[in-house]
Image 1 (cartoon, rainbow, N blue to C red):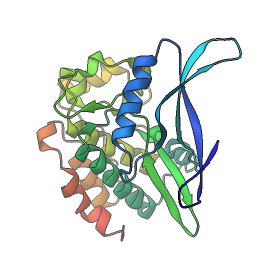
Image 2 (image 1 turned 30 degrees about the vertical axis):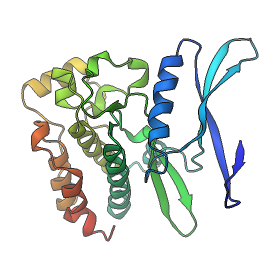
Image 3 (image 1 turned 90 degrees about the vertical axis):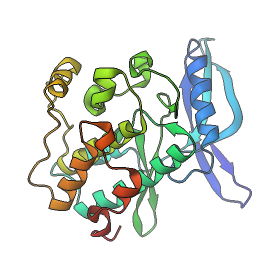
Length: 256
């Protein structure tokens, strides 16, 4: 569905649909997205409320209109590059992701479920695609006393990106999003999830109990390896902050 902006530009929107039993989830996500209107690097929604619709079978559903990403997801793009994305591309997209997360945190939210499928690509003529963060179904307000374990699993990704504190203690803090950034960077470089496909939540939990983090391959550029390690510190208080990561040589050396 296309809408014209006040400046006369045409923006295409798509529907995100929630079932009849998911009104609370739809209202929560829409509330977060409204709070993030105008935020840099964040997918935008349209309207002042969610929309109630009926399916052709007469079932009630709830709809949020969101910007359409012509470039698809970062996850799909990664799959097109079996040997991984070029370092310069990884660097530029990582910077964009961090800037978007900075906007989200400054607005008072933790994303909570950042992974490659929730990063959308917007083609730009003559330039590398712009990336924007989407899917705020697992987001919580900063300082909100919410356990990761209490979040609806329908709105969470696979366990690959779960941080040690979320797995072991149910904690959801800002540093959880930093852990997720490290996982996404690893995936962009390797075309593989941070943990082997055979691992399930119980196996990942065992690794965390033994103070084992995902392996950072030696094939990554030195600055990238250091960057990822700063994101994947097992102790959330030891992880790098967004300002520190934005100043990291991995981003600046690639002229991001």
